[in-house]
Each structure stands twice: as C-alpha cells, then as structure tokens.
Image (cartoon, rainbow over all chains, first blue to last red; front, side, top):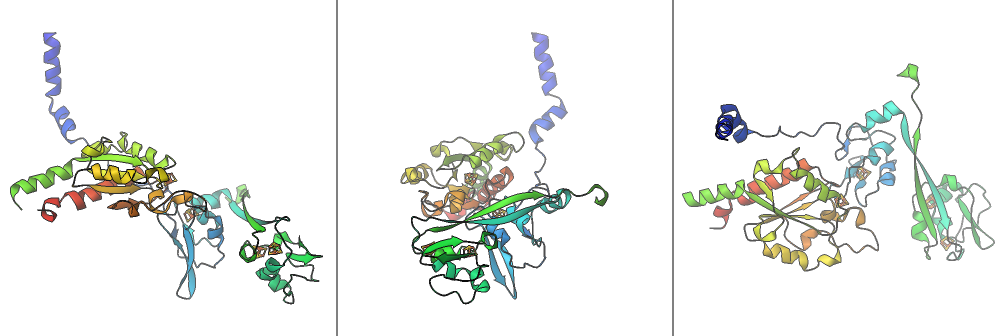
Length: 205
Length: 151
Ligand code: SF4
Ligand code: SF4
Ligand code: SF4
Ligand code: SF4
C-alpha cells in the first residue's frame, strides 16, 4: 500500500502532468467552410425570379428587395433556419451557403416548382374575381371582363355556366393573387417543390 | 475603482453560472446547449458552469417561442436571479417564433418584450460555438465592468 502511494505521488509530481492539468485547453473551434451558414450573395445579378421566396419554409426569412436599379435577396437572421433551399432554388446562382452550389453541380440536382389550384365548390359562388385578378389570365385574354367569362381556351381558369373551371393549371406561377381576391376563401394555391436529378455523364466529369 | 472592486470584476467574469429555461421549443436548441457541455466544446474550460438553478445563476439562457404557460412564470424566474445578471435567447424561436409563428398558433414571441435580453443568438438551432461566443461576449460586456457601472 505504501509503495503504491509513493507511486501515485511520483506520478502526479511529473512536470508534464502538472502542465497538462493546469493548461490543457481544447483546440480553438473554427466553423468548417462547408457548414451551411446564412446564405450570402455570390455577386451574380438577381433576376427577380423569386424562386427563393417560394422555396423558403420559414416565415419572413427571405425577401427580395430593391437595390439600386435591380433586386437583391435579403436574409433575415432570427427567421432563417439555414436550410439552404433558397440557394438550391435560385436558377441564377445568386446565393451561396456552404458547399451547396458545388454539390448541385456535381450531382446534377435541381428543384422543380409546380402549383396546384384547389377550389372548394361549396364555398365558391362563381363570382369570377379570381379569374379577372390572375395576372396570367390578364396577359392571355385582356378582354376578360368582370364575371370571369372568356372565350379564350388558353386562360388558366374561367367561369362557365356559373361554375369556375380550371383549364390550364400548368400555367399558374404561384403568385397567389387569386387567393387574395376571393371574397370567400374558396381558392387555394398549393406549392409543390420536387427534387430532380439529372446524373452528370461520366465523360463530362 | 479600488482593488476590491477590481478583484470582484475579475472573479465574476471568470466564473459564470448558467441556468436555462425552455419556454416552448422543439428541443433542438436544448440539445445544442447540452452539446456545449460535452468534451468537444467543453464549456467549463472557460469557467462557465451549468447549474440550472436561478438563485445561483448569472446568465439565463432562454430557449423557445414563449407559449402561454410561461406568462408570469418566466418573469418570476428572471426575478429570482440575483444581480448582476443577463439573459441570452438561444435560437430563432425567442426572436421571431421561427416556424411556429403562424396563424392559429399560440406562441407569443419575441421573448424580448417579456424580460430584458442582453444578447440573441439566431439559428435553428444555433451551433454550440455560437452559443459559447454569446455567453463569452456577455461575460465581457456585462460582468467585466459591473463595479464601475454600478458603484
Ligand atoms: S436558408 Fe432556408 S430558411 Fe433561410 S432564407 Fe433560405 S430557404 Fe429560407
Ligand atoms: S396563383 Fe396567380 S397565376 Fe396562379 S391562378 Fe392564382 S392568380 Fe393566377
Ligand atoms: S373568387 Fe372565389 S368565389 Fe369567386 S369564382 Fe373565384 S374561387 Fe369562386
Ligand atoms: S429555433 Fe429551431 S431548433 Fe431552436 S427551438 Fe426553435 S424550432 Fe427548435
């Protein structure tokens, strides 16, 4: 017992041990560059495609605002969850975060947007407000009057015999103007975001 | 500032005791605070100790989007902490309600309007390094010159 006590004391009296005990610190922590941070501008010009705002899952996290002559996406810290979807969604590569852009290029992935128009027939009165408010409809058929009647088959939706009929759902841009113009909350736009992969060919790599 | 005050400042800023409350989070930020205690980040090497007792605490970490259950209670916890004290909010939730601040939800952010907040750490969840940084910056700004500010 006596010898083991002496052994312990000798062990703890080693200069190296005392130095380690007093001065040991974990290495300073640096955030690796591939960690997803808050998205930052890459310097490319924003084309106001607004895909970032459509993809963003966090309320109030991203806003595309005027900057001089053009536009610029602005990230609000405290709202942004650093998911990186806006970086992935932007067709012009305006934002960057971690190694998302490199991964997109390597894997050949992209995001596809589409929109579904759901109209609750119980609530809809066939007033046609949504049809006349829709900016795509306005472009296709400038003659469409109040009431939403149209003889043009290229419109997104129109009123036929007092009922609303959706003809070209695929043309919807997801602006949600119709949602805001409906007096009964009958029309809802659903945003569908699909991941898509086009594998990069071997010889191109 | 006399020598005693100097010593008090020094000692205070070298020994920060932390309590944390979760006022309605998804548990994500709680886990990141917990990660600060792990050997990887090792919060205690900076003289920061987690007790989770407001009467012993210097710094209160507030996590979560402030649900109705926390009316009065959070202020009560805050009042129990002896001065000098500072509150830090962790994550997006106490700043904006994060993903929970939607129509029909009961959360009442920001926490800033319920108790005074010294620092906010955004992120969902913030990284342990960011939480550590916030505690250290509060340490340097609140506790380091407390004696001069409050003679
Ligand atoms: S990173 Fe995610 S949460 Fe943040 S702005 Fe982009 S899409 Fe929104
Ligand atoms: S979301 Fe916009 S584009 Fe789509 S139907 Fe409604 S108004 Fe038209
Ligand atoms: S605005 Fe609303 S109520 Fe009127 S036609 Fe469109 S969906 Fe129906
Ligand atoms: S900020 Fe995000 S991770 Fe933290 S509690 Fe809120 S939802 Fe959860």
